Image 1 (cartoon, rainbow, N blue to C red):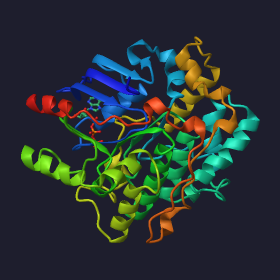
Image 2: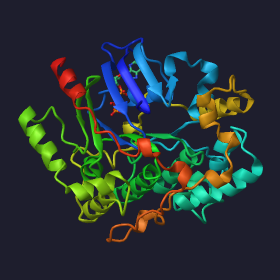
Image 3: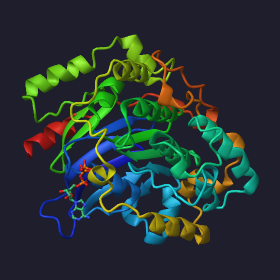
Image 4: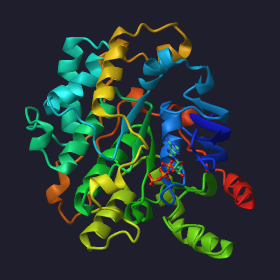
Length: 386
Ligand SMILES: Nc1ncnc2c1ncn2[C@@H]1O[C@H](COP(=O)(O)OP(=O)(O)OP(=O)(O)O)[C@@H](O)[C@H]1O
């Protein structure tokens, strides 16, 4: 069964004039890297909010890591979110805490042992290239560094799934490349990444799975897609372009799929960034107040309060799912972060070095090792509904 599965899901906001999501079905396998693309208002953030259980579906079924989200009570939400990491466009760091404290806090609130925290935090900060910045406060960091802290915080618990809503939205192309390296490395340990983005350059370089939304419907789902919207090109052209996007040799694709060798997507992105090209639809330099996503978002105070509540949260039942994600029982020896290059603000022209091979707990099992090709039938079906 897919790690994330949406079946005929609709979301209608109380004041919405049309469904924000309209009868969508989507399967995402363990280890997938999925870009959600689509015009502003197409439903990307809503989809991520449903997965995060920030919002509830109006109809349809959503299953994430074996959890039927309809059955999760509000009280169980913090426990559910332990299997997820989430990264927002605006970082959402706690400004009165240092880098070290921001990351440690994510572990403290789920009751992780002090000794484990002391061991994990330096490792994850190393992973995102922030060693040496432990004592800095967010205002003493660049935007790229702040986003690295946010990713470190999201990943320190080694979640099965990382949700990211325009994580490069406020960053320049070179800094964005560094963020994509971190996300790519995390994905290569087996963590599933679902990332909403408007960044054409990133999507076209990475050649990952692309799911396009339009008016709340899925209008395209390509295994190795490009950014170009299905809406701008007639079907035949979209197909031709999708062929082009897939035009990589079979052995190369197999290597990418299996996570072997250096990431070609990152190498392509590095070349593209350093050649000075930028995304056609990119909102890279848009001011934060114009590009904030996650709808209403989670204000910092609210987020801190929600996290603190989890401290008092008593896992309700010892289900298999709970056991599978029970982070506070994790021993730090299970934590095997990928290694990515140092801060990319001064990235070299050469493609980045490959991350260290992931440790066993993070790897896909044999049964899961082959990423399922995406199902394009959904897009076709949904197109008819447009
Ligand atoms: N809380 C809400 N109440 C009412 N309508 C909402 C709410 N949040 C989102 N919407 C509407 O739902 C639709 C989808 O919005 P959503 O934020 O998911 O789009 P998006 O693709 O993420 O856009 P962007 O790229 O600008 O972030 C839009 O029409 C939006 O106005």
